Length: 142
Length: 142
DNA sequence: TATTGTTATACTCTATAACTATA
DNA sequence: TATAGTTATAGAGTATAACAATA
Image (tube, rainbow over all chains, first blue to last red; front, side, top):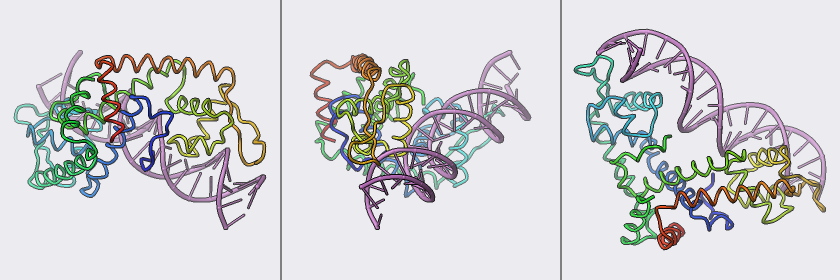
């Protein structure tokens, strides 16, 4: 899908289309903003979840995200392979793994958050502060 | 991706996330609404383009949509195989194909438009008329 | 029996590149 | 040489189902 052109006119009138199109466009830009850090949106989301609750089990990460169990394994695998997170044995249940951030993971998360904020700022530039709040409120209502 | 649950709280505060999530959710519902007619959103879009300009070449359909040329071949193939559209020889350029709707295509398009409107109505139910206009205006600005 | 994590696999969707026939 | 349409193929991304270890 190309985002370098305006959406074709016949469609630009439908709210649903506008939402879908803008949603994809923003997801795409967000993804591009994380690329220099070698992260995809999923990694960013999971890093945030771990930071919010260190020692989460993978099941908890699945519940807190919209990623299914087998994909979560792959995401945590990648984070672990790159030294951003680590699996530890769970204190009371040997089936479970407690997932924690490493120091490198903390740093990478901080930089990713900066990148995310910068992109959000760029994307929302056409809207002033009040308009952003209005948009957020409307989207929450949906 | 599951849309049967609310988005996880830590993310629900970011406008970008809300846009992406709602965009996907709506695309998903739209897709589901077209499924009984055995159409995917792409088919619907292309049917609309043909209806707007009967006899369009596939290149014109590509330019008017966000679908690339090889995918367009597949979409038109499917429409043609199901008797909704047909390729005719182009009057002046034998490389080109003029794509037209059949009567069945017209009817299916009409029913698809109804389904699309119905779904849009359901999805946007939480918003009153003024709010919908505001949302549309904000999304156009982005 | 049920759950956690895992693996292997299949499936969807789309883009890329190469080909043909025409211009 | 360039363009319209086509085909074959490869890639990303995700979901499904089956499995081992543990509860």
